[in-house]
Image (cartoon, rainbow, N blue to C red; front, side, top):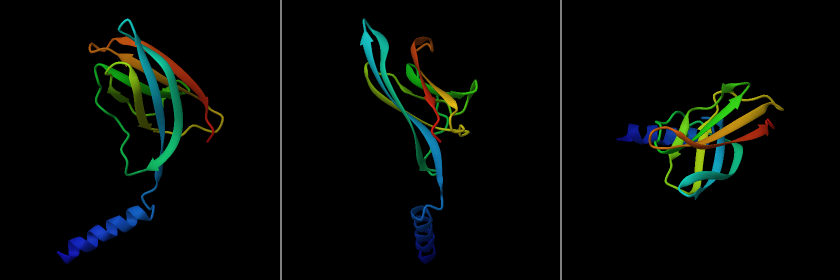
Length: 133
């Protein structure tokens, strides 16, 4: 019993001290409306952020219907495949960990797509950022 309590305290101390470190993620807040049953991406707000390495924003299984995000630099995907269930008009948030960090000043394109239950694309939009570093 005493050994397990010490182990738990040690884990808590390591996590609290920040020894685990941070990683960079892309976070997209997406507003989608529907016009005659067809989704329309009204707005996309994209930011980069630092999160604990303990948080998991890597690959997820595909959602059909779903909202998808891909981050592209120099024609290569630099984030993990992420999607959330599409449930009609509303607010959606997708967070994805970056596999590689762009250089300051690099062009980064964030693609947002909505797919139906068959995987067919219903609508798409792109936001282009200049990486701040």
